[in-house]
Image (cartoon, rainbow, N blue to C red; front, side):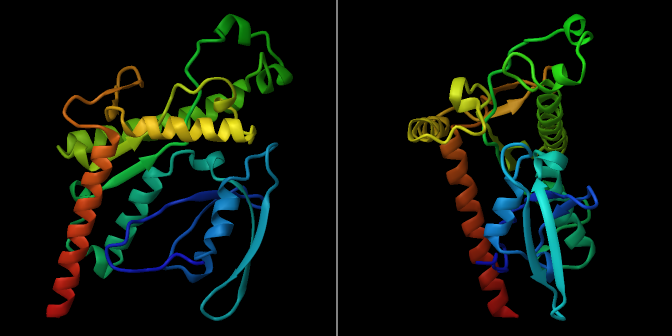
Length: 260
């Protein structure tokens, strides 16, 4: 099924990287040629190199012209797509999209961001400059069960976006409009990408349920580490608050449309 377009619908953002051009691809509902099947979006943005094959699919624009896509994991260009979502909404505001007209330019204070991570391994200081200075190509690609160069790119990209978004909302005095839920202490098989046994999948489900009961965390801009946000409740409570706010907004918009 395709993503539907209804007023006040939450924006789900995903990205992939195009193999022929090495350019990022983002999916949008307003561009018919990019309004791909949700299944194609999920397969493409999960096609991590060396783990899963690249994905090919086609879509058609409003004139019936076919557009081909050959894509791999979006984490190559945007492991955390939060800023992509903010940029997309900002663009809609500039274009005069009726759903966003009440928001002034750069009015990020009215944004609500729910950023869901897929979990990361517990941070371990495995290597130092003296050791990695002796590595060649193979050492950077694989060393002691880790993939140093890949881990550095993906984790740095994710953390940097989280820090930037967190600081932006704090500066605007609306830090409660940004909710990042991420488990950053996975160990063993649960920290792997390709262990799909029933035992491991059930373990991840248990981790996710426990994460709902944990205190909301915010990033420490000095250390880059997540710390409990004592001004907020649990992740479960914050998700319920977000849901209530979205429900109230949707009801208000429906009433407003009736008056037009």
